[in-house]
Length: 170
Image 1: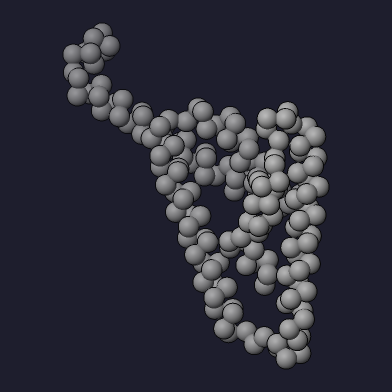
Image 2: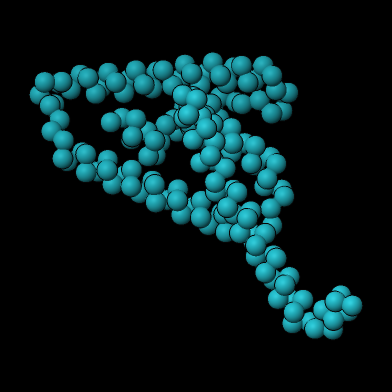
């Protein structure tokens, strides 16, 4: 009898559907936002790497959760993750910019040889790393998908860029 009454009242069924859908979207967003945090806390409690746990959690969420969440939740999560990433990167660059001028750098004690040799060694190490990994990858791929020297050169040239490279430099 209730079923027939609800079917006769489209406003009630539409409202209930809207509430159920929004609760589902809210739950999906909550799980997707809390899962990396919980994995980080769990790893830290066992004295393991929190960064690696977040990375592995991201792989699992991408494989299992991403295909199963709604379009609304996907759009909201994309916006939130983009905002958090942009804000975090901006804060890192802000601190780095302040650090460049607020910290006294003893160039006279270090001399100019240190930065020059550092750049040479970093580029050489990057070239060796990219070359060896490229060789290993090319051994496992078919001929049409192998990395050519042009691609490996671009990978070497691009190297470490962005906020992470600057943060590591400090």
